Amino acid sequence: MENFKTMIKLNIKHQKLEITETSYLANRSHNYLKILFNFNTDDWADKTKYCIITDNKDNNRLFIIEDDNSVVLPSAVLKGNYFKISAYGVKDEIRITTNQIRIKLAESGYTQDITPISDDSEDVFSYLLEQLDSKVSHAELENALSHVPDINMILDYVNDNI
Image (cartoon, rainbow, N blue to C red; front, top):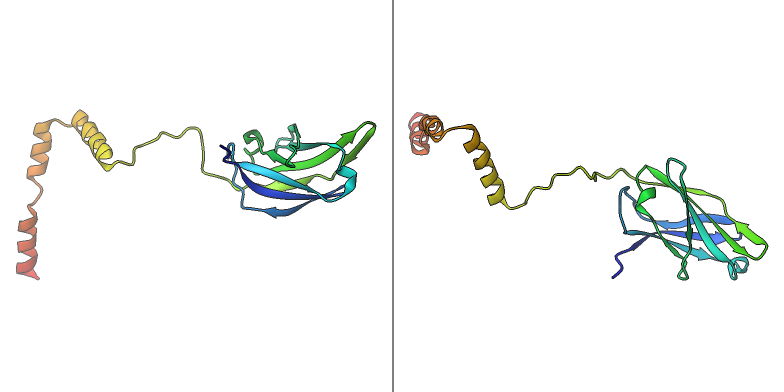
């Protein structure tokens, strides 16, 4: 099952590559973003088409543009705050190229150094109690709690004095 989302639509007319549609793009996505090319002129019709994607550290990656005119964006190029795209087509001794365009990426909050925590409040409560038990003896805890006023005592005081 494909989970790809076409987020960038590019138009190619002869040698001019331009963005026709793009969504808000955040970096560090994986197996989600797709580029869709629209070849508007016949000079591309019989060519094998390639896409060069350059990350923000000038590492180039070459991809064959699929029969449906798409390329899945690799996560390796989605680590910085932008990437660049260009295309070219080849047949026999003919090569047609395009200009390179730059696409901005917003900073995501994702990092691989995340320690997951359960959303279950009972698990969080149990964890806190375990941590408390490991630091404080039950006698110390009972002594500390004995100094906490009873809620009824507090309410009586408020009612009597206000």
